[in-house]
Image 1 (cartoon, rainbow over the protein chains, first blue to last red):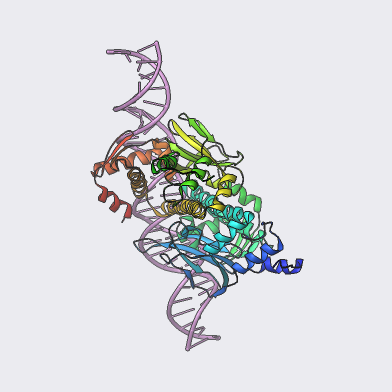
Image 2: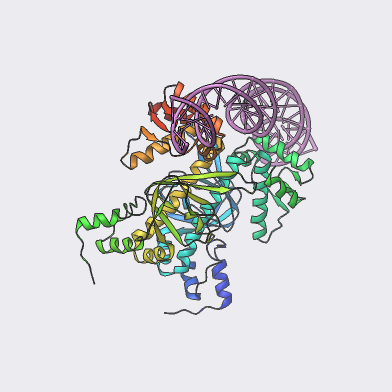
Length: 240
Length: 240
DNA sequence: CATGAATTTTGATATATATCAAATCGGTGT
DNA sequence: ACACCGATTTGATATATATCAAAATTCATG
């Protein structure tokens, strides 16, 4: 029953889902990789604006973003909507739903995107057999906690300028981790959405972009941004 | 090798660590309960102000608070410290460290407290054998994510009054869940700490308490608080 | 290419909270 | 009971961001 796989097959298997978060750091045998790969065979495409899931939907699967990007948001009782995160290819989405069996936010495609579905029961079953997968799943969930606490700190004690610097540096890092330019990229989200995420109004975002540009830290034109002075931005994040 | 346990023993086992979060909802056999119980045999006491762990410490265990309460905080580069959470008896603390192998914040006893240590490797090993424990661990981590995202929403889009109302209602619920009065309890934390947690200054906290009192929603005297109008507070949380 | 809608930028003003300062209160030890 | 020290409350003012409004730019559509 032991299947043998070539290194090439293995690479394909591993990249099958583009599971940067789930796959890469796991030291699994070839066979184990294949098992994991079987998990996430089912793929789905989404166009800009499509919902991956909605708040209240029954939770069954995590989703690994293969390509494209998503945003997550919640609707307040009064109708206002608040963005809780931006997710890029290679990230896992839906972790918040595990505790309640229902999704707690909406996930919406920001552009044409592909995801693969990871049925959570199967993921749990497999992770009982594969300790390194189990550990990895724990790390992913913990990382989400750390990320969220980072945002809490940002919202609790930083001013507009620092928040935006933190946001841009975070995007920059994530692009860099994907082998893309950390200094020149497209913002997939509107000023409105950035503001909602950072706890600021769109006008403040616009003003703060202008400010950073005047200081020569960035060059921005609508959705195209170039970071001109990375260290300057970091200084700005550190604040006064 | 199968040990038999009476219902009474089982209750003792389960309550051994006062693991509201870890134990109660898990449907384990008697023997499994005993295994879990073995995990958390080591107990430690802390006095007010003692550190349970510090930011940067090597991560090895989660901690279950048996009695008392803790706060977690991070130190910014510039020396300011920000409270990231208040933890009560029955809660699990340390989840953020799993992803980095190092603790990412300080945990400090707010009063005389007892914790039991849960070596994470052992917890993982056991949870590979006990699916319901595995599922439960996942739920606990997910719940932490949901909690943090709740704070994000609060910090991002609520005013002082709403934040404080949310804070008080949250405490109230947690006391209620422990069979204590949801309307009359002691605040273990200072105005400073509440402010730090809610992204406000201590003066604002004090003023807002006064405001809520003037409106007849609460009665507060230093650290003793009584909620007089629960619905009023909820309305206040919902905001304008 | 022209038109209109949506997004972004910029300006003027309002407002919530921070900051600075002082007074009051509560607890602790002598 | 008294004096002291930290925590809390309250007041006056400053400031960052929100809000309201209008202009400028970009984008979508026929």
